[in-house]
Image 1 (cartoon, chains in turn purple, orange):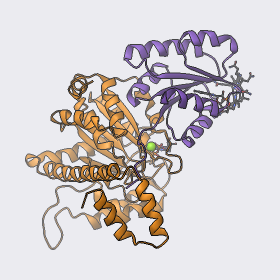
Image 2 (image 1 turned 180 degrees about the vertical axis):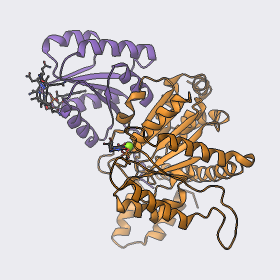
Image 3 (image 1 turned 90 degrees about the vertical axis):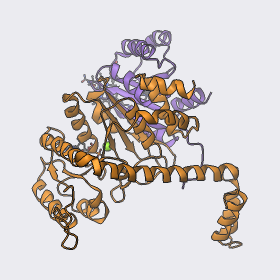
Image 4 (image 1 turned 90 degrees about the horizontal axis):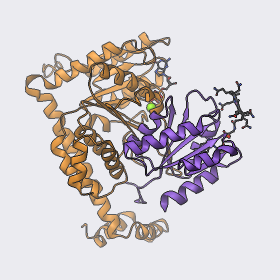
Length: 135
Length: 327
Ligand code: B12
Ligand SMILES: Nc1nc2c(ncn2[C@@H]2O[C@H](COP(=O)(O)OP(=O)(O)O)[C@@H](O)[C@H]2O)c(=O)[nH]1
Ligand SMILES: [Mg+2]
């Protein structure tokens, strides 16, 4: 049998809207997270409600959503509300993709824990998760 | 939360409690066992169906189509989907869920992805526990999609009431793989992607191979009728063709298991329990071994001695077991 290292893993749900064709970001990110030892559950959502349900069922530590064609503020608001209702408000939520600077204050106000827009690296996101989840 | 509270919440339908216990099982947290003990009386009701076959044959898509049919019959469903862990990083990308997304807003479908985390045989160490939690949640049917490595996923047959083996047309090697080992454990064979050329030929091959392995009226020697002869069903998981036949085959198999006072089902469940006890035994011994040896440091030291030929591995193992007070 396997050597007994810690069996625990950080679990991340990575999703993007089915209406948004930009998937390079999430695919690249998923690959980097795998290489850093995380378990990444991929999902493609229609309604953001599907993300909340998947996060609940999978009991992930982190919900990450990629937005490249807008809609991030409304989706974040709904997601946080649903998470509260479902009793999973404790999970970390991070977003990335094309996030205009003007929207950052609104996202922060909605308790979005990390914002990783264009120009951010996968390493930054991974470092952030490691720091916040192991804390 | 006490194990009593956890169990009570799960039985009364609180989803976060169930999801969190599954996580504790997956992370091998000792507390999880206490809750599982309490849930045990609430299990044994669900039909557990295994779906196995090589990567890419369409197991996740087929699972999705089966879920849709089961929901039409108003049955509640649990899905456990296993994908491989990278042996290099320990991480994993679990993508089965994407194919089942249309059930994401259905409260009566609970989908859980699991990574193998170094376990062989197509499942994870935690699969049985996760299935037990879904059973206690009251799911009518639990579908387990294996990782699909091809050759030796017989673990699933020791866990499921019904094992479905999926193949596709034009994969000559795949049929070979089935021949090589898992033909005997299949209860239903699916030729998926029947929209492609050669589905009929593949189904024919399978039927011919099955006729060599299964004998409906017994072999010439024993003449004992076998209670079940595995059917071959052709499907297209994308457009739903063949799904009625598959659902019928699943019901027929269940009927064969439960007919006659459930003799066959009882036999399977005894075999399943036996395997479970052995697995738990192995896990506990393993944990004990590592705990008493300080998690591997000693082993590495001894391994160096073996590698430099100072001691043979058999003696090394015995000495480690002695110092862990196992022998
Ligand atoms: C390639 C591309 C496409 C490809 C997509 C191919 C694919 N499969 O992904 C194609 C040609 C299909 C395409 C189509 C369109 N595109 Co386009 N596309 C781009 C382009 C040039 C690069 C995107 C990319 O792949 N980047 C590489 C990846 C790795 O980077 P990334 O996505 O930014 O992700 C990084 C970070 O943002 C972060 N990240 C991303 N997601 C997440 C999630 C989390 C949780 C975290 C932590 C981090 C994170 O991590 C990544 C790591 O580096 C960008 C412009 C640009 N330079 O960004 C425009 C761009 C995104 N597209 C744009 C537009 C408008 C479109 C179209 C609507 C065009 C049209 N009129 O038809 C359509 C989209 C249709 C639709 N419904 O989705 C606009 C979006 C504008 C906006 N949001 O305000 C952009 C910004 C171009 C522009 N300047 O106008 N596009
Ligand atoms: N043509 C065709 N493609 C299918 C069918 N079922 C699944 N697929 C495709 O086969 C690929 C692999 O499917 P997936 O369910 O992920 O396979 P798995 O690895 O066995 O779980 C996907 O691109 C599916 O869309 C089918 O019946 N016909
Ligand atoms: Mg799959």
